[in-house]
Image (cartoon, rainbow, N blue to C red):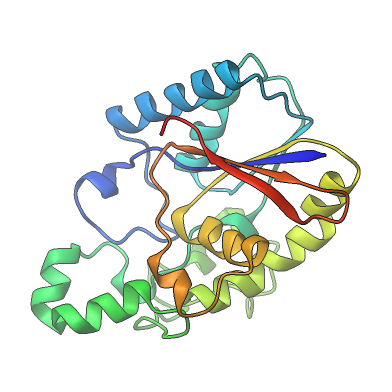
Length: 230
């Protein structure tokens, strides 16, 4: 029986200032650091030992992983970073204050952009100075792959190849895995793992810094789900 632990990164500086973040690389807030450290302590108390760690290429997730591993005495385990675990790309909304966006576009429209499964946000053009196409960490990607905006459906589609090629084989081999990533990339994974419908995924929330533990059987069916710290 393998375990998978998902951790949404601790509170970021833009979570604190209520801004759309997406692929913008912002750091953890002081509270976010505390949440990540606490996640590690909860993992240690639960006695969970990992064989492999995965995270995105964004600072807030990487630091959350490192704090969680350090405070569970497992900083030494193998670690892989991938853009496929990045947060959902919020397109031209990135950097905007959520409350101000609601005033500009209307509460209902912003709610649809944020929570719907298959509605895209306003897209960011590739020649925009804030485009990920200008970021060195994505230099080896086909430029057509670098998004100008994503919904949860598209996020799931780019997360799944990594699940199939990297994560699932580890779990099938009986290895315990930790993933520190983002609200929407982890919601996408949870949707697949739990078989959550397109309509019901809208209601799934993930707290910053809270470890979510899945137990699997030999065929990767979920046998138990636990939220540490509840």
